[in-house]
Amino acid sequence: MTNRITTGSAVGMIRVDSELEWKYAYFAKERQWFAFCETLQIALQSSSLDELKQDMIECVDNLFTELAKSGRLKAFLEKHGWELKQPLPKKKTKSTVDMSVRFERVEEHDLQEAFC
View (cartoon, rainbow, N blue to C red):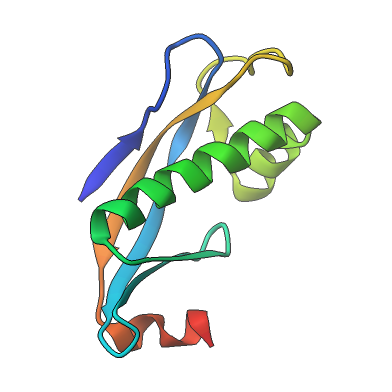
């Protein structure tokens, strides 16, 4: 399933020409949902799938907003081989991210290594 992160208005939008992949699974023993984005090396957990997906989107949005505010977003994007679709918003502007995100459900054992 591919979605787009678009949580705000066009003002302050950070448009990135890229796609992130989040893998997620339900860990029955813990009764928790876990997700991992290998590209960003970010792991999350939640008690519900809807909450987990929202957390995945918010996490990326917050990361890019903080990178933009600190002036490190351009270097971060270059490191990953990503390009902006339009100039960055001003640092003091509240920003949101617009990029493609793929959510892939996997088996619990496929995420074990990410959480150990």
